[in-house]
Image (tube, rainbow, N blue to C red; front, side, top):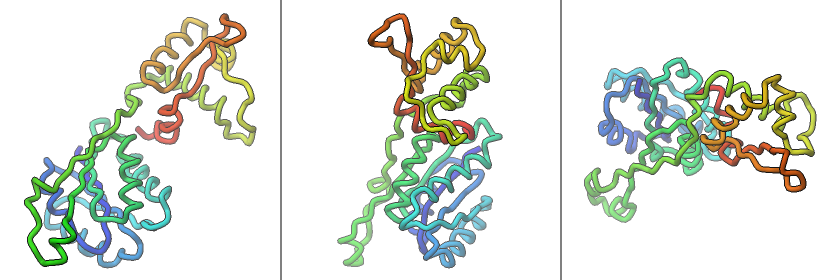
Length: 238
């Protein structure tokens, strides 16, 4: 399934241009700033009705609520998580600067192809025609996100235990000590060799890293990488 996500204000803007450059789209989501929700919703629904593509509208505070915009994308991914072959394309042109930033941030986790259409303000002010779309359409590079869709059930259990140790959700403060290999054995009930295998899987995906304890090289410490911290809130829905 090909899912198209676009941000917009009260105008269609670049949406038709980007949409027509994409391969078959099965479903569309349009994230609209609440200040322009009336006009934006009307135009978006008409456009996608004409394209015969199902469209859902999500209203956000496009000028102040970064987290709310990211959560809108999370809700889209969660709604479609049953389709393991779902792929995403994003048009970040039509919304606010904050919406564009939030969509780019979200694209990292879902591996979305992200597009932006440049607009020559000087030509626009003079009523001149813009350059051809091919010269203005930019496909933004997508950062390498850890492959978290293909983590096995047991490896996921180990990762959940690591997250649970460092980021407790029961009101406890974060631990003062670094998680060790032997402590993780106690938490999971797994053997040392099994823990070692799953830590190897997570390490190759750059979700965790390990190191020998400085004062005792017989003890292996387990750390969550920057990528591992970033994907924590997304891993359950991808």
